[in-house]
Length: 93
Image 1 (cartoon, one colour):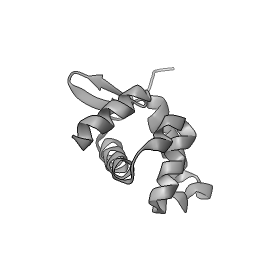
Image 2 (cartoon, helix red, strand yellow; image 1 turned 60 degrees about the horizontal axis):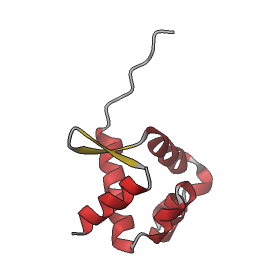
Image 3 (cartoon, one colour; image 1 turned 90 degrees about the horizontal axis):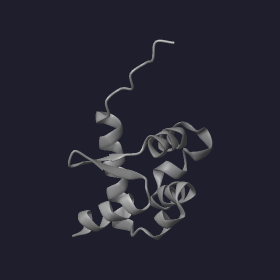
Image 4 (cartoon, one colour; image 1 turned 135 degrees about the vertical axis):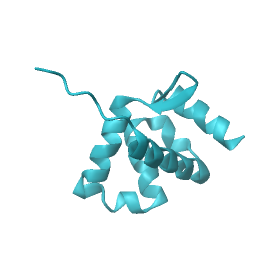
């Protein structure tokens, strides 16, 4: 139940989309998360649950209402997504 509820919340917040029966994070959200992880000012935030809640809420305010378990699950999904995402195709310009 938690996973289905979380997926619904991520879809409603427009940070994720369903494609071909799979869930994927939007490019803007994925890019924001990467910048948040890389940014030295957020390094302390990524080490705590509350920090992750703040990072998520900074992108989409409705994500501030996620439970602790939902924040943890979102971080796990993000980790999987970032480690298994297909690399972007470089355009020929």
